[in-house]
Length: 410
Ligand SMILES: [Zn+2]
Ligand SMILES: [Zn+2]
View 1: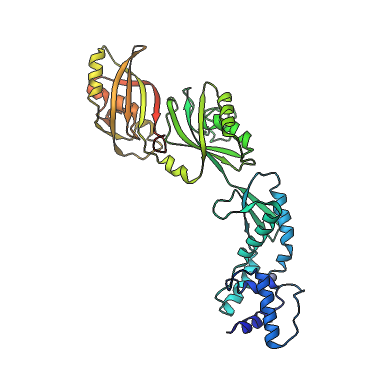
View 2 (view 1 turned 90 degrees about the vertical axis):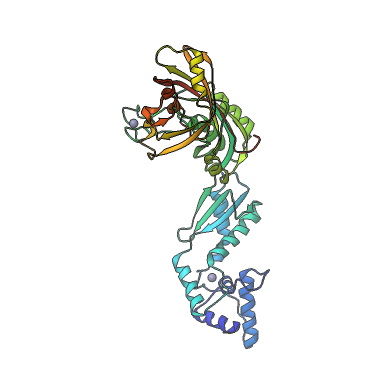
């Protein structure tokens, strides 16, 4: 069908605004808005048929004159984002089913090959209007704020995308888990066992860092993504552990990171400290979490019976460079699949004695279970220090002293 014929057929359905008429040919030509396109098509038809041209002034059967409301929608978006700091945004739209039905019917009835959907025009036109009035930029890939229009209810829903920063934390106090744990008895609802806090442990590294973060960013929540995690009873010292903090739904974004670092270190003093290095983004989180970095530990080992430091040091050295077969430890079997894995002891040595215990420094491949490397976990880990010593041995304290960073040379 020739274009003028198509326009005539479209207008035969009922009165149609210039936006909707133009949008049926939205992918033809460039440098025109859909309403210019629609007006042009109507003028071309009037000239071809030598009929009087009449401006659209009625009620559009496709969109119900949605586009007259663009300035009003821009007002609503600006209003809904008034208290939010952002520089880039994107408009989204919940298309009323009737509008989608109307335009899809015309597309298929007339076999139109170059239409643009209602949704794209709404998002673009409202985006342009908001941008013109606020100076903020439309960004498709990683907008800071997304405003979703709902034409049926007249409301705007705002989603604020997370902010991320990268750093390292150290944990000086034992007994603090890395992230929040719901109370085992009540699963977070609050009960007598947890003193109605809903938490198994009152504080976590995540919360000690997160509280000042939430306050500074005016955020809804803050989530710690760590490059692995240490046991609750282990300290994390030395280089600290790399992490990315995700600040969920922040009202402010331009936060001074050195100032934030100082505030965290002040409020968590003696328990946790952070060194914040830079801003980060979501794409880095998976890389960080799958970090296969080697880890270095400093542990205290208690051995049954009398044993000289020399004998002990010799036994320790036989584990150097050895690949260890570890069946999933008893203590984590309830939350991990039971399987045997192989991890290498890259470096190990006895570094002296302290409080009647031996000090051992171990550099292990990522995932090596250190406590079981010493105790043997009732034969589930082999070889083990206990097996070599032919007597029971166990770790009484454990510090992680080094975790390699996410980037080379860091
Ligand atoms: Zn319309
Ligand atoms: Zn509870």
